[in-house]
Length: 113
Length: 114
Image (cartoon, rainbow over all chains, first blue to last red):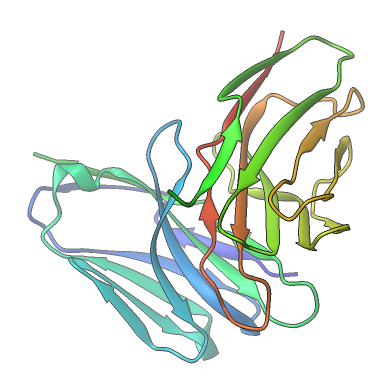
């Protein structure tokens, strides 16, 4: 059974700081890994999708990396802003048979002005 | 605009009632999913469907039922057998395999038992 862990559970940083969020998973047989952002009481907004054959993806100030063999992904946020404050979730889609998506518990980020 | 629409945004259920949450997508995705989110916990998979007229139980299917009669629609019924239904429910869709496609989510339905 796939298990996804995100550390830390919460993070508070001053505005302008670069930061890294971590995601680890136990089963490396994945199709892809996706990072989401969730604002309080809202649905999930997709940030970056990394296919299993890729090592990283970039979008603006965000960079996500994937090391499938070690079961790890990181989300790097450059020059953080107060508007980045949200909960960040990673999710892995398993390969083979019926594909399921398993989520981590999230990292709640607060960027302090 | 293409996307996923969940309705209603807020729903109140009395003890012993069944309620149905709506999820509609116009993205032409084959796969659809229902998740439950509780405070301090990750999203847990209730049911998923890879194609019309087919669906599979997720990790916490007890007390829930679904149907997939149309590609665009994947309604979730919370039955009276679900003992703790108060939660935030999220619907998602993606392109079916092969291929590792992006999952898109609706804005969620918050269900409260009164």
